[in-house]
Image (cartoon, rainbow, N blue to C red; front, side):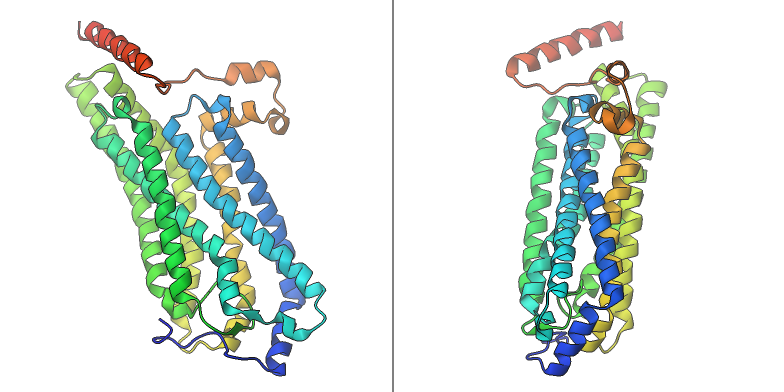
Length: 372
């Protein structure tokens, strides 16, 4: 890639480079943006931490285990991005205010790539998490007759493992292949020439739109299955009835979150893609001029973390009730209110062969009674 595109790094720097870099790093605009970053990343970090706590709290036991695992994995990805961006903002703020040499504002290109790597990882992990969630819901839709009784939790855990493995591989590959040699005037969101990111940004934008349409299609398919199996043919068992209703319920809960993810991701990735396509001749100085816009675009990451959680909790009554029970100090609920809001779990996981046999016997008897 470095042979195709001109490098945005400089092989060595002069006093003029040091002065330009120092002026850009210490400008009032950049200092203000760092303060804004600290506020939003701290809020996103706190929100992700509380949301993960709610998902693991006993008040969320009425939610499907796969939904809790998937949302937890997505929240961890957002937590990593917010934590790293908070570190970068605080480090840059302290570094620029204690700088005694203008040339200290110059940063090594590979160091910049390593600093930005956790953010790149979280972006890939979030997208991969949505894809894995779509795969898991597709399996649940196609194999709804036997999905719950044949280890749906194992499927979810395998997909989450694949999500992080693939994200690590792609982000490490991007780091090693695209990191330039030399020095940068400012460490922006681009770790190499913007043109080298056009293909990956285009694919990610297309995937975001496709996933949103795909989730809406899954919802319609499950609704049609429900009508065909239960209303027209009346051919169903209780486990099949539960699975179809659970599919519809889960997708209803996920679509608002997927919409927020798709919208904010398209705004952020689309902005980076538009800038990469617009600038025909990218030079190190132009990258330096892009620095404030880079920080503005990166604000979408913590904003996404905040809005994603607010939409997930605000638009879904089960999650909202779970949050009220797990965090009464934030909602001002009493012990009596919390006990009334805790709903019994619809289907608990089987932790042993004995529980599995008892569950099979139970549903077998109910199926016979239902058939009569």
